[in-house]
Image (cartoon, rainbow, N blue to C red; front, side, top):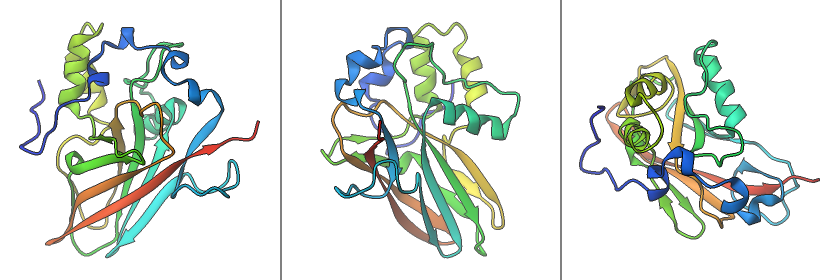
Length: 220
């Protein structure tokens, strides 16, 4: 079984521990979400054009460019195929069931003169109602698989490990790396949230980054 993170590790949200087969259908979870929307980068603004604006947040610091983008289930599957064209999505749920995970593509392009160290366990998702979630790692996935229908939890972990940020990750200078950041389902009510990276080390310097996202209506 994958090893847990260190002292900063938190209690896993209860929603992730529910067996995947018992997750509610989307209509039972979020009635407000019936109107079509997308998750766009940037803070919420009343005058934002429906369906407009970028989907990915992007910041460059000391030669290191970090991009973060929300991915729905098809987007997550497409991203996984960029790493392995023959791979299926190990996080997919059966049709008609609510998504078990909120997924983001995290991408690092290290054009600096130093290696970069990223600690995914020190990322936090904070909504405008001050609800917080920490990323799901391989230990969390294993526990959820054991509690659910999965007959071979270790096989799930072996499949997922290539695609998600789990423990401390180094991006050598001149290199590029993209993986998934996973969270549990978003709460029922929210207008915007931010992904706060509290630990990004570039060489010997430690930095924090914050990526805002907001709910954006899609014109019907």
